[in-house]
Length: 121
Image (cartoon, rainbow, N blue to C red; front, side):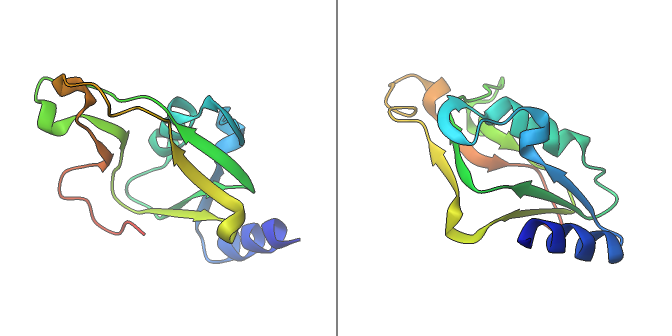
């Protein structure tokens, strides 16, 4: 019922909502959901407000995207006009165990990364 209300309310306000499970995110916490969540973010238009919705479940963030500058390594890369929304404490983002244990620079990363982003909630 809550999901339907949020969806109807968001559409009524002209907001787009993208459900991360539609992009293949595993809500059991057993498989890495980083790539599907990133796909949902990339499908959002940075010029209009978009809700990235996490239905009830646990979503494991289990991989880092390295860049040429290790200070810019990231798990999720953001752009403007994103709102992350779940179902309260029933929607959990969990970082994979030991993701940052290595001594190399690839293990240094931002959870969320973007340059000069606006309207992120």
